[in-house]
Image (cartoon, rainbow, N blue to C red; front, top):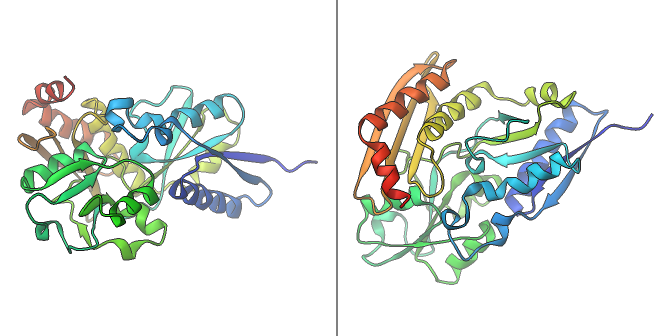
Length: 309
C-alpha cells in the first residue's frame, strides 16, 4: 500500500518557504504515516515589483495561483500569510487560521536611526502599505514616505544600499527568519495599528477533501482564529483592500473578552476614523460587525469611496 501524500503549495520567497516548511513539519509530526511535500510557485504578486499592490490588483495576487494549483490537483492545500488573503475566498475552499500568532506589530528598521522620532525632516521611509503610509503621514508629516516593493531580502538590500533612511516591515517575518537583530524598534499598536491578520498563518484547501478538514483543525489556535476572524469581519464589511488604508487588531483580554480596534483613513493621513469595542471571544464576527458599523456611522463609506477614486 502506497504512502498517502499531501502536497502543500507555497510561494517561493524565503519567508513563504519558512512558513510552509513550518506547517509541513507540524503536520508530519501529527500524521507520521502521511507524506507532506512542498510545491513552490512564483505568483503574479511576486513578479510585479515596479508598482504598488493597489495598482496591480491587490494582495490576492499572492494567493490566486496557489488556489488554481489546488483546483487543478497539483496541490492539496496552501499556506498563506493571513494579511495577504482576500476577504472572500472562493466558495469551494475552506480557510482555517492556525497559530499561535507571531508578533503582529510593525517594525522600524534603519542603519542610522533608532526610531521614527529620530528621523530628520525629509528622511526617506519605505513601505509597501497604504495602512502604514496613512499612519506615518499623520504622525510624522515631515518625512518622505516612498513605496517599497519586493520580498524581504530585496527590501533589506534597498535599505542597506541607501535608497531609504528607514523602512517599515512586519515584525513577524523578521522574527520567523531569525532577523530580529535588524529591528531597531518595534512600533506599538497604539502608534501603528497592524494589518488585518498580520502575524497569523492560514491554511486553505478544498472543502470537499476527505481528510484535510480534520487534520488541519489540529493546528488551529482558537485565540488566534477568533482574533483574526474579528479583524477580517471589519475588513469584509468595509470592503477593505490594498487601495484602502485600513487596520484592525484584536486581542484576548482577561477571561473571555475579545478587544478589537480598527481604523480607516486617507493615504495622506489627513483623515482617520477609529473605533473600538469589546465582546465575547466566541463571537468574533458579531464584534467585527459592531466595530465596522461604528466606522460606517462616522462616515467611513464616503472616505473609502474617496480613496478608491
